[in-house]
Length: 255
Image 1 (cartoon, rainbow, N blue to C red):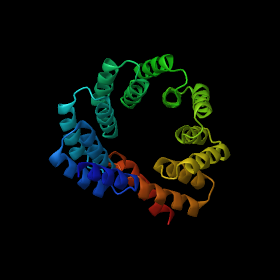
Image 2 (image 1 turned 90 degrees about the horizontal axis):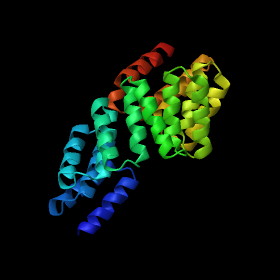
Image 3 (image 1 turned 135 degrees about the vertical axis):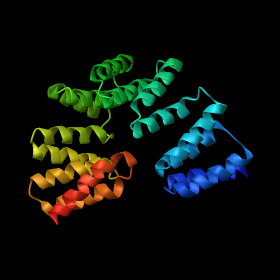
Image 4 (image 1 turned 180 degrees about the horizontal axis):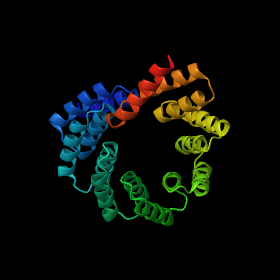
């Protein structure tokens, strides 16, 4: 019975039915608690924006397996989503202490440090990640973002292009390049990279946000509105409330 429920839960997740998946995983937990199922439940709750519930699920899982790296990664990512950067940094450091070769933990820690405006520490942490894995596209993309924050545009460009070279299927560096070119008023390049990123993953809200502003600057008002509206449809994170309000105001001003 438990295996059947798990199979149905995984299927619901694959189909994007997070509500059904959560109910199925909760049924599993009634008869058999495990760190794996608590993690699956937390992931569905995060996808639904139920962060408080996700924290409870992750806590329950960590009580069973305090050193479970998957649970700790999920917790760190949740703190990052909530903009609780100090807690995110501490959680990723916990992973690093358990396994110093977990390059993604180093990079995620660097992202949290950047979000906390500690750019020097963020750069140092990211370069440490690249020492451990010189071919990590995640690390190059993060270092590119850090370089932009430090106004090192040329190095940022190199980092994003290197990330694409290492993994051309990842849309994030394309969108990062789009933002970089937008900031330098190269709208043609910005639009090209934005379209390439969204072709790889049409569900990335920030791609539509950038594309909306590009179209706005090119006096393609209706396209700008369409992209801004698509951004609002996709971006549901509580942390994005301010930018959602700004975009809604822009749309109202354009109509």
